[in-house]
Image 1 (cartoon, one colour):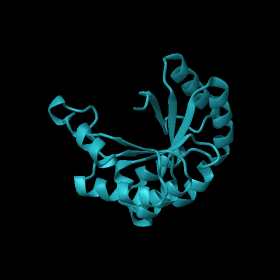
Image 2 (cartoon, helix red, strand yellow):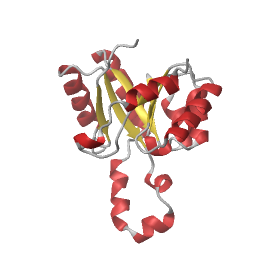
Image 3 (cartoon, helix red, strand yellow):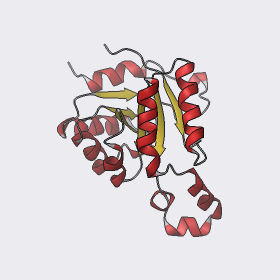
Image 4 (cartoon, helix red, strand yellow):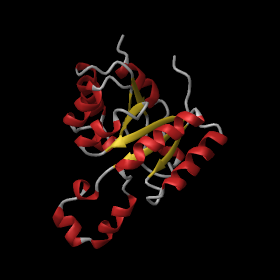
Length: 186
């Protein structure tokens, strides 16, 4: 059984400021986290041009993007602080951009159906952490098969509710046993 690891979700809260990223990493280490996780997305690839034209608020999220040139310095800072660096790729090219730097790939639950993303991450040979919050049992089983058949040997499934904060009545912690069986069928 793997050791429990605590992940500090930095996401896109860096405001495009590398020093702020460093501060998040330092604080995560200080409070005992094992990993920091960012997100690598491009607004123009997350949303259609129609959506961006219709909702100008979405354009403002461009400032939430993690600059590619931050990846190497963030990786180096994490190495110095003895904390793992991870990131969620939200476009296919992000896999190659992240591969030299991340300890593992984290795949968001709403990307669980994107076979090309699953295959691309699996083929790197890096560990994968897969969120399951928005998926049915059948979708999770299919994603696990896609990952394993493309070389993923180290897979962690996260039981998620995708509701923040999660109401206790929606937690269904017994689902963790089911996920364990999906990952390692007897």
